[in-house]
Image (cartoon, rainbow, N blue to C red; front, side, top):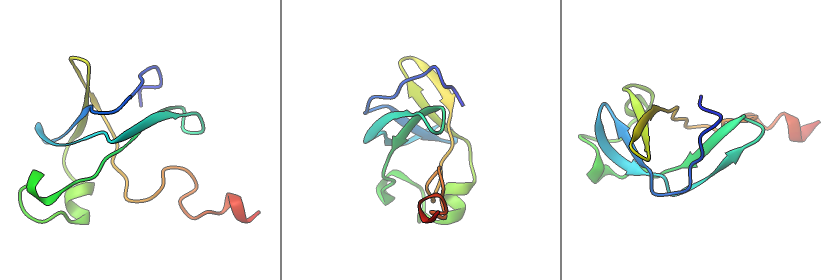
Amino acid sequence: EHEELLLHHGEIIYRNGEPVSDVRSASYGHTLGGPVGLTMLERQNTKGPITKKTIQEGTWEVKIGNEMYPCSISLTPLYDPKSLRIKV
């Protein structure tokens, strides 16, 4: 959503205003046109079990510097999730 931003690693991920994880690995996704980060949600950082509903609902943000930015969370690859491009 913010193509001018860069992620490095260690940026905090928030769900509904509460810190739940951090960016473990990051880069600029040229195909996606913006920053891409990987995180791992662990049960001790959430209230209740981690379900598909937990991930798909709620407000997700990442803190870069002193600013909060909305972010998208996905259970599937963001680019070519069905691997159709590599099968051409």
